[in-house]
Length: 145
Image (tube, rainbow, N blue to C red; front, side, top):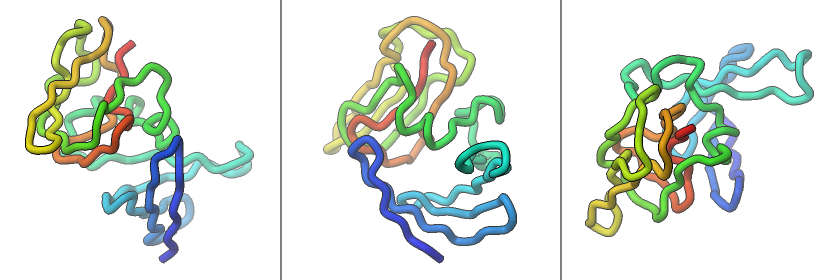
């Protein structure tokens, strides 16, 4: 096992590579397990990991909507967490039409529930968190376009 400490957009991530089997890689990112599939290295300068979420996840409608780590870290126009906390509930789903003031996520921080609004009118394209996730300040939560 190899452990890497990455700093992306000011956020620190501890990545533990647990096992590699061809293009399939098992990793822990800040204590959460993910199965990562690397693209064919011949087709790109660098392999691009794709997160395969567990099948129990309802926040992402299809594999095409599954965010890559690059999207999850700096998705253009994503609704960001205003403070660190724990996701208590997700009140929207991918493909749902929303209004700017709709409560999308409830975040617990300092023993208080904080409503996180969608931020703009549109359709939810991706949700980057799951119920129970601990998020850092300015972490991407969801994308509405």
